[in-house]
Length: 369
Image (cartoon, rainbow, N blue to C red; front, side, top):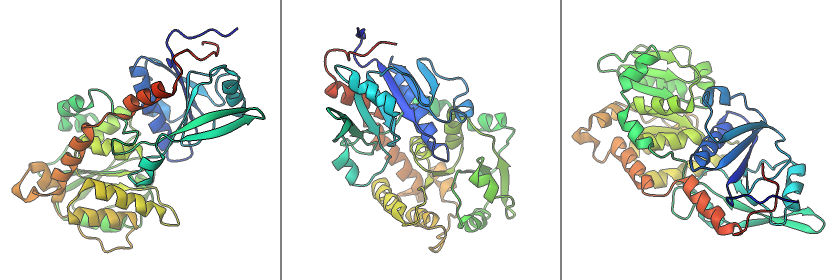
């Protein structure tokens, strides 16, 4: 006989497959930790937990990490990240519940128009000859008609409290007088030599993240001082973005973190051979309202140097100083984008409301943990 839970929707399972570049694990861990912060019991089922050792070395209260294929009992709410498909045996267990769990496919982040059209739509799944379950599409996004963005409570208070020089010194780094600080987190990019030459126009400390950035950048022209970073926890990665004057980020998780930093940044979408990633870049540019030169830099960076490099100059540093030449500038645009998005509910809050709208008032008739 099934044992009902005492709190409907209190038990959540998040399924994650790490495809490449660790972004899947990063998003899923942040989501699991934020759901647990709401008082939920969360199991993160992941096929490669190794990145969590440096992403989240302290773990999080309320989050249990399980290896794939995960548990034998279904939770109240099941999230599959990025269409990874929970194991067949687990789905059969979901179907065996008298009132099945709320099943959600957490999709990729985009500012493209299809996100609003597709968010919240059902996708009926036939799990046996006589049993169907609804899988619901949940799209993160940048408007009130989407699933929102991941954001921890108190993040902005922590950001305001950061002493960037003290944080850099904790990594053995010291910013020279008048030196701007730039972070580089990227995919392979033939435009890198142009960027390095551009940065050499004024003293620059370039912080290289592990992986693609450190492999591609081994030397730099005079005026650019290189520093190789270790793998950083998610908390320290946030601190890295807060400590810089300009951030180069890639993919999904670091894009959102760069937005919350409220500083000038350049985003590299995951490159696709058919150029589909360029539509994502244009959609985000339309939302971000950046000045023309910043937009040109984004386009050149995402076309891997196929476009003329417009030149950074000392934009980021001028903006950080708040000079009159920053109106309407890159720094102003980045701060404005952050403020607009801070006015919206975060992803975890919207996800809880969405689940509440779909779940039965009665608890699912599945065994409790």
